[in-house]
Length: 153
Image (cartoon, rainbow, N blue to C red):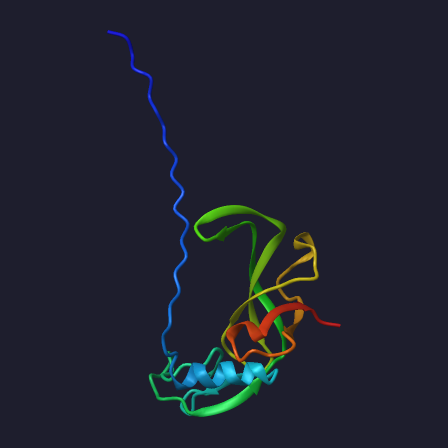
């Protein structure tokens, strides 16, 4: 019996979903402040943790947090990854230049904020690098108002 030729079919299904949902009062204020080029965090009155982006309940001591404080706009890269591909509507595409995402500890914060770092060769990026926030102009009162981070000074 002759071996049958196998047919391979590759199907690409582009993903394009739009979600509309309320972010709640904490993230709503955070986003509005980004439009004013400010990064706001929330401070726990119990343990003193300063969390950005803000959340209502402290993950450390389980208290409701309600003290707003401004942090950053500069901070330190604590960890990072370099992506050589992007996902665009379900399709994998080469990233040229590579995309660098970092966990940044903003001045005055005790938590990390994830953000894209631009303006530096990925080979030169390292933990401990000082970075500063770059905001969009004009602001759109959106999470994208904090566009990316770049090396400070």
